[in-house]
Length: 355
Ligand code: NAD
Ligand code: IPM
Ligand code: MN
Image (cartoon, rainbow, N blue to C red; front, side, top):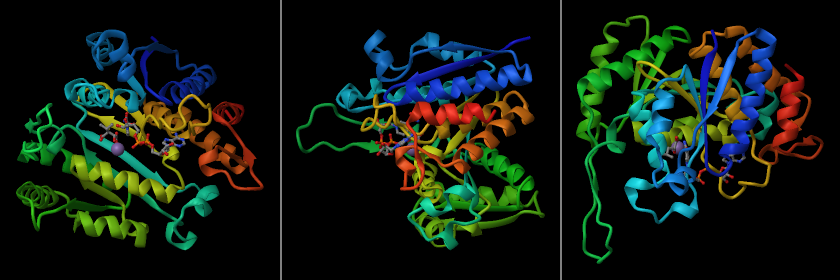
């Protein structure tokens, strides 16, 4: 039976990078007889322009009925002034909520070939292997908001951060299970010296950890964690944190890998999972054909691993990416003299030729 992959390219570089990842998925599908079927749906500003909403019901329903979703990115300056509830970013938030994707996995592993690309010293970056487990459908992103559309200069706006015990329980459980398959260490990141939600987070985490005596639990304040990630990233195994802190720390951690164009993610819930690079629609380079497609290609590998349990095909993609880098191919975000300057298409072809 075929497996249906819903592809949601979105805006900006979204189309370019999902085209690359789909080409790679098609090649491994042929090689391993995976029988994948692809169906493309609009979202983000592109969908807003087409039908007045960033997340058409047909896109959400297609995602809900798929075996897995491959997502590009949404957003861009063209839609910066649309009504807040219709912003392109609402598409990705709506998909996460609509699919119940509470666990966002953002692995940060520095490829040997890229150790020298980080702005940090080689000896600091070498050996980095962190998994950020970000809570994805709670916290300040989804709390009550108050926002006035008319600017008079004296109004107040707010976003409510709130977490319940069951919400914290399930994400910390997820992190503990992930750590069991890794190095048995979980660092929980919060701001419990200031925030009530963080104090609830820390108490709940401690309770969950009692069930996992083999796991070392460490608590860090988010400001210190941000610093530790650049001083000594190898101290981390699994980092578990809330929605907003996870968003910020994962972009920071992306620097360790040399470029945000390298980092994939998997968002997992009760049913269909979604896979997307951690970066955005990169409006500054959109349409130029120079975006790094590797984060999306590696997200496709995660899709095969987690949603379809096709471990061999997933490893094949990851090795093909490593080989393309070892052969010297570099998109402009990672280019240095002496290497092969590759646009999106050339990099994709390099990966394809290694499959
Ligand atoms: P961004 O991640 O799009 O870009 C930040 C910087 O990284 C830019 O200089 C960009 O050129 C570069 N970059 C990002 N991806 C790259 C790639 N694959 N190859 C090479 N360079 C790459 O973040 P931003 O500029 O803050 O946001 C732009 C838009 O994207 C905003 O509308 C934002 O809301 C949206 N966004 C969407 C998602 C998503 O859909 N999941 C994620 C983040 C940001
Ligand atoms: C990400 C993005 C999104 C987020 C935005 C586009 C809503 O920054 O996926 O990291 O904040 O979660
Ligand atoms: Mn982000």
